[in-house]
Image (cartoon, rainbow, N blue to C red; front, side, top):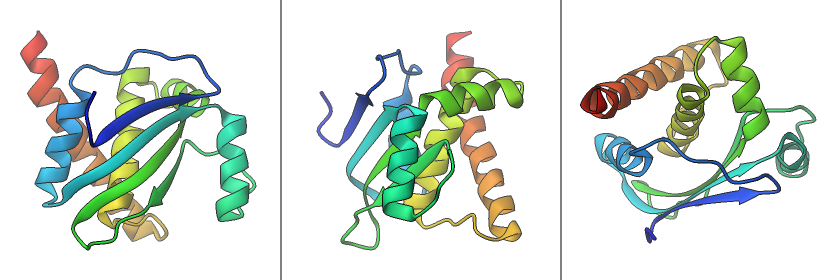
Length: 148
């Protein structure tokens, strides 16, 4: 078991994660010049995530991810990513991409929040989407091309 990156399944059945996800996440963190202290990636249901969203963010709507940043140092990564498996599956269908691809996109989205990126304004959303695309392309170029 890794000592700094943990994957959990809360109120859903476990499923297999994309190959190389640990190495890819570590590469993202290094690329952004951060140091990994601890990340918990928690896959859960819509209901569980909606409860968190209401309780901690006062948002009464479904979302694919809620990110909690616990860093104590500026370049440290310490946080929790709560991801709705149901939203990932639905979004994959809506955007006509694989579940694998959408899962990676949501993970990188949460990591970008931990790096300090925001998605509040249209300009911020555009930058965040371009960063998501960049890191997804790195996964494809580094790991998928290696397997084919």
